[in-house]
Amino acid sequence: MDDARDMEADLLAMRRYARALARDESDADDVVQDALLRAIERRATYQPERSRTRWLLAIVHNVFVSAKRRQAAETRRNDRFAQTLLSSIDPQQEEHVRLAEIAQGFAALPDAQRAALHLTAIEGLSYQQAADILGVPIGTVMSRLSRARAALRDGQSGTGRPHLRLVGGHDDQ
Image (cartoon, rainbow, N blue to C red; front, side, top):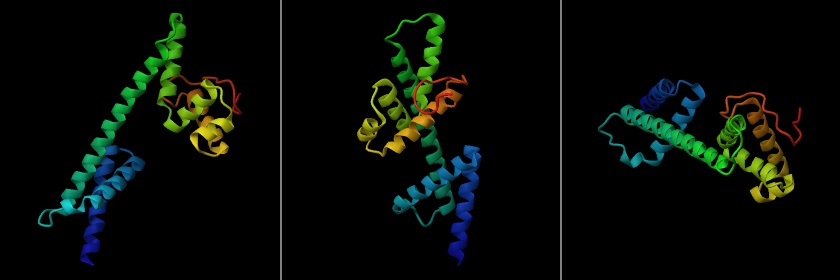
């Protein structure tokens, strides 16, 4: 029974620390879940003579820092990708700024949404053709497109500019 209480105390400590790091309950829960998985996978590295709580908190810390590094790297990749989209065009100053915002928003979309939007809007494929390429049902493609368009239109994908009107698809206004 003491072991169960000790594990519960460890879990509470992990959650508290993750929330302090992430400052968001949902993100903190993700960190704790990843940390627990890592602890299980690497349980052979645990030394029983040392504090299990400190070992687990170190794992929480490492998971959080690794996620932040991945996030920063993804942001850099998205920015570079947005720049490559602009490199082949030479529009006027105002148009260039607007295209840069759109390119950054497109680059910041989740991979699945960006792929669906690219295949249909850029490559001109039908929803069914895109579904076949992505290996998902057509309804999934339609859902991803709807979410991608909404994110771009509302400025949630990092463009900072709300009310972008995208033409095509079922969510025209």
